[in-house]
Image (cartoon, rainbow, N blue to C red):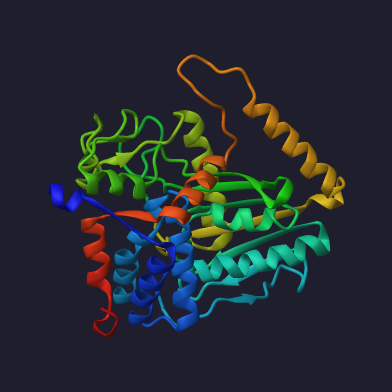
Length: 348
């Protein structure tokens, strides 16, 4: 067990090369394989290993089961209730890798928000899109306020309940800072993302109190309790629960994916992307400058007991990116062996 938990470091370029080979071996065209690999490794670079290359086994399982069509290409489809070329877009994900669908949605809302001031895209037949912060940060870099949300497989108990009725239902916001940066908020409405629970399970770690229940509805700090039939809890008690309910409804019903715990749910990720053109309301340069000044003031706040700094959302990830870009991405030996096992014979 100790050997499995030993770590090595792998460069982002090498990890991208291996992930691309794994996806290509599963039937993804070269450009698709590389795009999905880059998205996963970006999560690793930012320290969100729960959304990084550890997702590859589940992606390959979904391909084998027919839930992911590896060669499919998402497309924009016209809706009977929406004006062609208007401020809304519907994306047919065609069960392709979700990253392709999300990238197409980003392209559409970027163009439409600059044309109309605001824009919204929903994705039908959408698979797991990866880390939502990737997409809102991209939009913020182009002078937009961006929001992305989605509902997913039921894993979370409603406040006061003990059975799974809600997805982890993440959401992300981003606004631009100066010099191309962004304030990025990205988290699940569950007290922890399932992927982070899986990471703790892999490392043999316990988790903090208040994150999950065992199958009998008792609080637990053992990640295994979730996989034995327990449930995650919403963050912040009734407040996180309420937010998750809204995301479940908006993501599930606008996209057509359905409510995850009800009949008719298609097993996908009901994704909604929204963008607002800042320049329609205030000069973009002034907005960026005021955001930057506010961020500086936040970080110079006198410290509370037990704390050594104040960070702005998104800053921790950028620190990790710099560290891992220079020194490599840490992987457990077990994770490295699993990645190598997934490679097609020609790539080993």
